[in-house]
Amino acid sequence: MLWSLIKILLFVAIVAGLTLGAGYLLESQGGVQITVAGTEFTLGPLQSVIAAVMVVVLVWLFLKLLSLLVAVLRFLNGDETAISRYFDRNRERKGFQALSEGLMALASGEGRLAMAKAAKAEKYLEKPELTQLLTAQAAEMSGDTKKAAETYKQLISNEQTRFVGVRGIMKQKLAEGDTDTALKLAERAFALKPRHEETQDVLLKLQAQNEDWSGARATLSAKLKHGSLPRDVHKRRDAVLALSEARDVLDDEKPIAAREAAIEANRLSPDLIPAAVMAAKSHIKQGKPKYAVRILKKAWEAQPHPDLAAAFAEIEPNETPQARIKRFATLTRLKPDHPESRLLLSELHIAAEDFPEARRTLGNLVETQPDARVLTIMAAIERGEGASDAVVKGWLARALTAPRGSQWVCDNCHHIHSDWAPVCENCQSFDTLSWRTPPAVDTSTAPGMQMLPLIVGSIEDNPEDSPPEVEIVEEDAESTEDTTPGDTETVLSEDTAAPDDPAKVREPEDAK
Image (cartoon, rainbow, N blue to C red; front, side, top):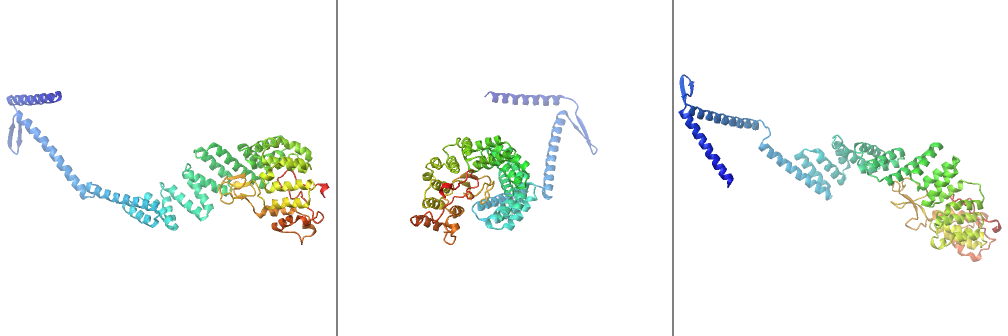
């Protein structure tokens, strides 16, 4: 209401002002004289003002007509106009529709349809950075690897799509099994995008397979730097790579560098068994047994292992069996109930010819964990206590087909390895080996064949009648009633004991 009143008052004031101005101009004297082609025009004050206003209006109309003329000339010369923009938007709409249909076809597994839609999208959009990627993926889906490779090479020529092209060719080379070329492409892709996690993983895996341990450690550090790897996992895997470097140095017979690398690997991951063994042996060579004991005790506390016991035995290689039992107490008392500790003590007592104590130490492992090693130790105990050959052969026959117990098993593919390795020899996975019992019962004949030399007797005296196969050995063990101690002789040889066992199983003198 107030605003309406103000507008009315303002309008009245303007009209009043104009009226007063017009009246003043009418009463004024003088004017403007204009001479045109010999004709003189005299304008009064009011007429002069009206003429000035008309001139302004005419100038404004002239400028508008001039801008219209310029727009018509630009349209005739082909510059962008509303009409051209309409056609451009129409082409763009068709192009993006074809691109969307191509992506849907690619997701649906229709490779050839996706390639056709990608070609149509390229025709309308003229944006190869979008359509060439769709073409490459569609060609791979259709099995046209040649077309895909050509498209990836075109992507490499563009700086914006170079990484995509390099990565695509790298994956093709991996599928073809050309790991050398794939490694070079992975290095180039890593240089383009060091934060790309998939590229980091591929490069690390290829470097580990190629035994480029120093390069793999650099890649691992980059993963930690860019936040794609937890710090504890980095320490573990860096220790594995350092250990691999130490193994290579040992192969090259460079003991000083090997010792340093092994000690570094053990420092990074004290629970890594091979690193602890190698570091302990390095300290033993340097004449530092206390450091070796410290390393082995820490590793044994994390996970008892036969290799740790073997390295612990190398600290004092010439000690008596009784002294060895006493010294090994510092190791076995860390995990007294662990099966490995009980097996180790049992072997040490067998070496000391204390067979009742060896049986007591072995405990109920024969019932709860009847693997080849437990049954072999039980055969040695029976033999040492004067049991008949039939009883001893019965234990050994069971050991031939029993599971081997804990082994180095790949957590990824469950492949069993005879020795630790940084890379699985079956699935090529990095740092996946762990010391555990395989998921399936291992009843292969390989361990049985390794144990056959334990059964000597008639094998040496009468080789023609000796049983060469496991089945025959078991049959011989079953027919124990017809076998006398004089017919066959069973010997648990020192040469056939496990190389990593600190205690060797010997035949007692009173049993011969």
